[in-house]
Image 1 (tube, rainbow over the protein chains, first blue to last red):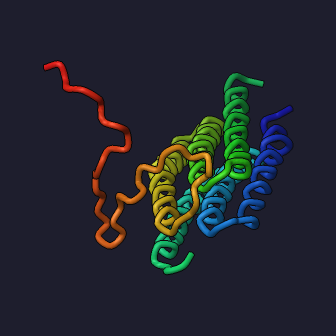
Image 2: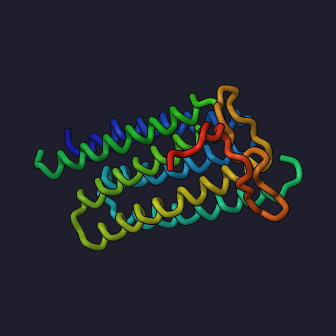
Length: 90
Length: 132
């Protein structure tokens, strides 16, 4: 079993299960902050997916995407937090 | 399988395990703040393991620096983002788990001015006079 096989057939399915669990929390709620936390986790799982896919396909250029995604996730979570705090009824 | 490949595989599997545990935590834990503690710590650790695996696998200075920059960035921003969401959620009255023992922020935070009052201590003061 090569490293690419391991990443493709073991690590990526594990991350897929994790993404489905996080998606369940996004859909279920119960309140908006729960959904925001679950979305933040989904982006972090996306970083892991990009890393293992870069190993599986030998494409180091994908790491740039991971860095930009981390940046955008922080901006998005900060914006959500401001929105939640300003909104009179959440 | 060489030693470097084995180490990379180990780091990848450890990272995937921690990320899966973060996802299980966000489904199973009872309130927002516990879920947040699961996702922030566990998923951040998982990402850093995976990025270390990438840096080890490609064995190149530019790629390794990029992976380390991603780790550093996630370690800097994840606590800040989690704190902001927790603060917004607490101020908007997200309910705590009914088994929560203490809520030390309750009634001590002035939302208008953003000031914390120390107030009376949460625990009972020690009885009797100090020795000296």
